[in-house]
Length: 137
Image (cartoon, rainbow, N blue to C red; front, side):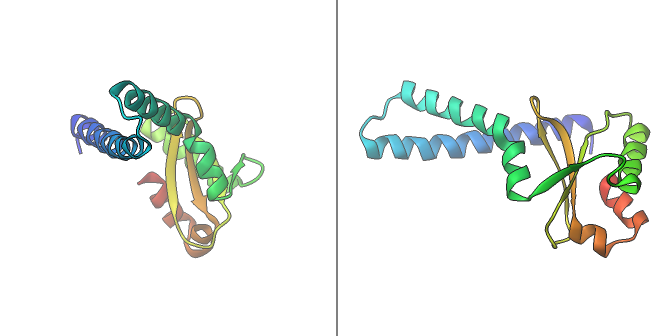
């Protein structure tokens, strides 16, 4: 996928999120009897800013992600370091989610920084080469 297609799909996703939150808050304000455009705009702005700032911390709490360093998980840390340098990107913070379901995910915000997490289930299920392929994806 080219970079402009990626940016376009990210912009589309942002538009959908803002659209859904707009509809939700419009219905809520109408129900409360205080619907006006200024209240709606303020609620949407506050909600989306809070979501952007607090999202990574909520994900860490919900998935029980524990940040790890080179001494905690040297093989996994080396994989992320190698993939980051190969891709020419800054190494994201690495975490392990203590859940049995095999999964990996990337998340972050401008404030919290970039992060990548793998679950304990993924580490138990896959070989190192397969984990590196998942992280590279």
